[in-house]
Length: 249
Image (cartoon, rainbow, N blue to C red; front, side):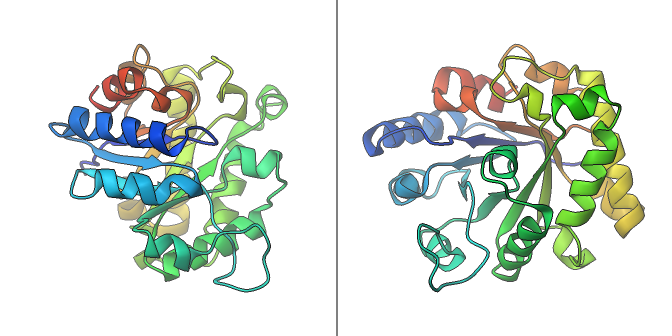
């Protein structure tokens, strides 16, 4: 089964409105001939600005997180209803920075996954191990646990709206990248988990992105691997001159 490459830019907590508009404009121009699937996920305060710039282009609008409830007394949170109103199509959930810096656990992430899917959003579910977990030989086990718990109760019909992003925590923003072989081994094991939970057809169809210091000079070697279907790009997504070559590898 042929899976479409999917390149996503997670802008994290960067850019002013003016800078975000300029970056989005450059990406619209630079990616209009691109043949892969593309997404940008700006900060909440920039979503409306970026939405206006990328409207009608081949770039999807994403958010970096969302609350586990639709509305209510949740100070400082942003609702799925508010995101949808701005044209958001995809939400990134379970990013390692949310898991480890803001202490989000699998149960909370799973709740968000269900809410996003209920509202027709695509979910990019992030999984990945810490350096000490990798060194202890636990990388596959940790990722299997995060995938299984993140998708608990999600039916096969909703799985087509789920993308998995494997991000080894030790490779995010550190300049270290998992070798293409290391990354592909984890991607293959994640695909195996999907196979056990849902069946071989679903396992063959699911898109699994790699994230963790993806750059123009390592993207092709990563994407050449059988189980790697795209990239969730952090730092290199903040400049057109690094993101466009990655996106058009």
